[in-house]
Image 1 (cartoon, one colour):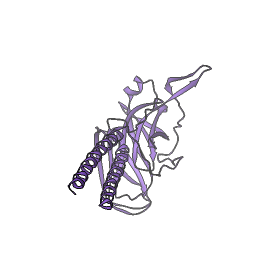
Image 2: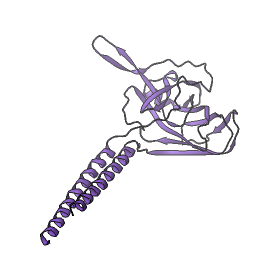
Image 3: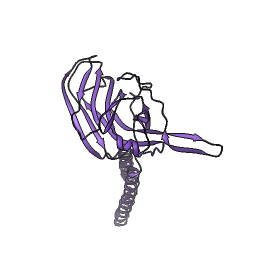
Image 4: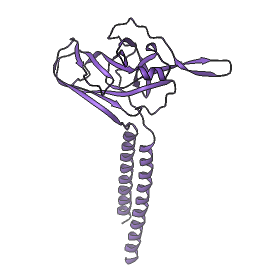
Length: 261
């Protein structure tokens, strides 16, 4: 009888550990999900894409601050899609006070199979926003979100219309991006002082498709804040309570059976 009780207890303990392990895995997954608020989106379907041939996507819409995308792939593709989403919120869980952001967006795809080799995106910035933030064409940058940090991409000013300035920047992977300007930091003897005037380092005589200075093809994870951890903790407490109740019931049943005998 004692062996049966011991076996039942170990089985109950094993089930509890399995449940806790499963919930921890789920909580970790939830913590790595970023809650994305999509403002506007557009996509383009490509029936066939030839390898090492420049492909163009003209974005004919006033709802998005993008005008054109050029890209190359290193293999022939069929039935591929690119999706461009303008976001309402910052997809990074870290706050970067060194950048004045204009907007955030995501480039995603299906059917590309890691074949993207070189690409550039043309975008526009409203002149009124530049004036409001005391910026010029030389201050604008595009940023890629890598390991939850914003990495500056080379950006070139190419022209303007009545209301916007037009720029081009490079990308070599799909993911989250932002448009904005980097603040200049002046260090004094006492402390570092952040100016409203961003660093002006971008030259205006580079090619449209710019060779990236760093390799951003590695997979990355953006961690969000605590919601998943809170869910895990509350679930763990709930499971422990259930285990205690089941254990008490089990002991009670065992004692009743013992008394009868």
